Image (tube, rainbow over all chains, first blue to last red; front, side, top):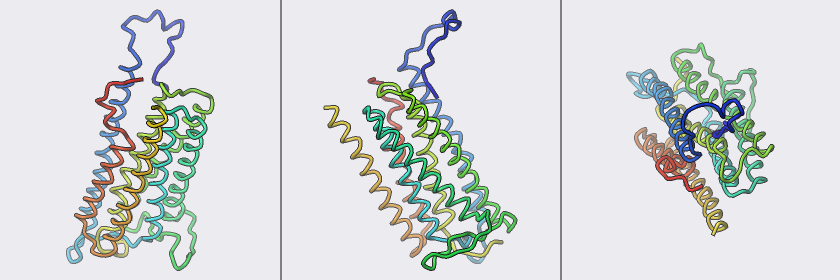
Length: 221
Length: 67
């Protein structure tokens, strides 16, 4: 994700005006935000589908029976991961390389915990059972359980896919940072990674209440 | 000057975290008590705006680069 490419010997003969770092950075930012904006349609379509299809003539808006505690914990974990990502970005901006690398690692660990919370515990792909202080640890919905399950897996699956790509992105940036690829003046890769990760958080800001809180809890249908 | 800016940047991160944590707690409380979809959506919008402004730095899009 290096924004500025050093022209190779071959490239140095290429025609065209040279683009300054400032202009390239602005273009990179605009490009990333436009990409994010295009993704809004994808996530919004799933969100709208949730409200249209999870509707009962008698009960009004409904939602699947999910563990409220598990939903809250995963949400808080993702919130903290966003905080540490911001801390890592600020550390790079002010030349604190150690805090930058540690911040990225903490973000990756928290992101992995969120991913485990959704895929292993909520999806329960291993078919586990268990309780902790009376709190159900593993979900019971299956993809073939009906409309509610279908939408639930589509929403959480699309989000989890972005979490996974975000984690890969973070590890790539961490490795680049370890090898000294970024400086306080030039660290577009770090900035882009942070924007992407916060975007994943913003999507969950709307998905969390839509999946776990809004409507009357019903069995899958 | 740089140390002050750095401290302010970290402080903004902590403030943002506290705001988001409080709003999440309020959202959860609304969800399990009055279950108002409109209220939860408004809380979600505020949370998203705070993240976009303070964490994603959307203002950089139209800021002249000072590096």
